[in-house]
Image 1: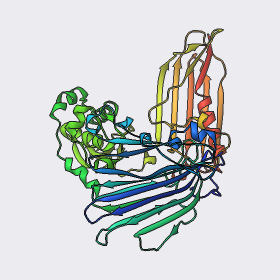
Image 2: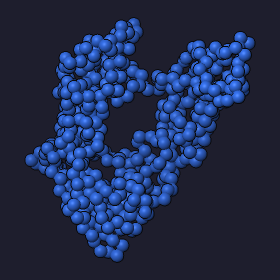
Image 3: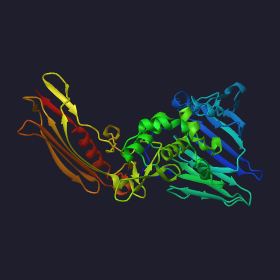
Image 4: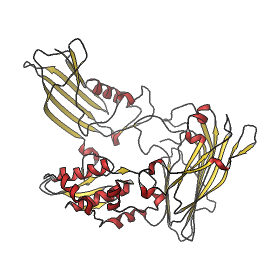
Amino acid sequence: MISIISSPFSVSHAQDAEYQLIRRTYKVNNDGTVDIRFRKELKLLRNRAITAYADKGETFILYNPAIDELTINESYTIRPDGSRVQTPANAFIDQLPSQCENCGRYNGIRERVVVHTALEYNCIIVLDYTIHRKSNILSDNITLTQDCPVKKYEIILDVPNQCHHSVEYTNFEKNPQIINDGHAFHLIAKNLSQKLIDNYLPDNLYPTVSIDCGDSHGLFLFEHENDEVPEANDLLGELYDKDQMTYATNIRDYVVDHIRTINIPEHLVDYRYSTASMTFNSNCGTPSDKTILLYALLKQAGFTMVDYNDQVCVKIPGTSSNDLNYILSAKNKNKPRPDGAAVDEQRSIVINRILDWKGTSISGGYEQMLLPVENGSINIDPAMLTSVRTAPVKLRNCNEKYRYTFTMPAKAKLVKPIKINYSKNGVGCIKVNIKQLESGAIEVVRELDINVEDGIVTPKQYKAFRQLMQDWEQYRTITIKR
């Protein structure tokens, strides 16, 4: 967990900039509106902060003019000598956000670009703006850690007495300061280290504050529970398969592959979602829009729908002596998961098959071939694992066993048999055996078992884990000589 520079997981990188202050103020009004005020004071320390990062020399503010009124309260740069340079009027530019392109119903959303001026070493950018939102819903999940250090982060919430609200804060290694000064909630966190740049980081690594006030926006999904898409009848016929699991998966894959995902915060549309028919005909939608569409298509195909929120739960007939409910997501093409089963319960893969040799010539009569990557196998690239790392690694535990037999060209010889078999305490074990049989065929046996608590490789386990991943990848290549 990252909250202060002295964190055991923190890595010291050169600092391009430093936030002197970030302040978020939320005010829920009696008239059913919300005011969200944001202030940042950012000091630029190196040239890269001025020239290489658009988020330092520019600020991007997403808002929806249909429900939001954006007001710039202050925008100026404090030069090292203390003088102020106001941001000129022509430095405020409204544009269509790139993520809303090619999806007409979201073309009303705007992105206010603030182009900061008078930038130089040790200057401080000051920007303060307010969004007045016509909505009775306030729901925000704030990650305090930024891509450069933060000296002070402040969050303030004011709500009417009759408004029920909830606030949760997690992943602080050192408890933040909670101020009792008449606000519904007032938090101050100091000296936050910058985000880590490692790959495969856990999702819940950084300090987070979650604020909710007003109606449950999740209920709005169920306004579309009875959506129908008659235009999709021909498509459902094309996707049909007598195996019901395959049929359901084909429908899911279509939604994932052919409906463009529009990644915008749901508060920009006041947590209202498009109908399944609208999403289908436009081939685009937010993740929630796509979930609504997937639900409607499966239901229209004759499946019994059980439940849905950010994922769909569907009853698949004939999957066992008792029909089972399976979880399908419109976000990815992961293997359907039985409802109630932990992800790690599906971690086993056992494959035994014969493959044709399809090697690539590498000169001198030598050929090489990579072993296939099977669906659902561990997805860790050892090239992305640095030699020194102090942050944990997030992964999906696995128990994979493969046996491949290659029918070989006449007189072909395996260049180098491989035989390794070892385990790393508390992490896992590996077995690789590549040999040529008397018949001339090549047999490949590969087994990998990674089993770490909660799917987290700790810094103490990292070296052993990295070795396992390197060997697993290295011995995917088979070399023969004709």
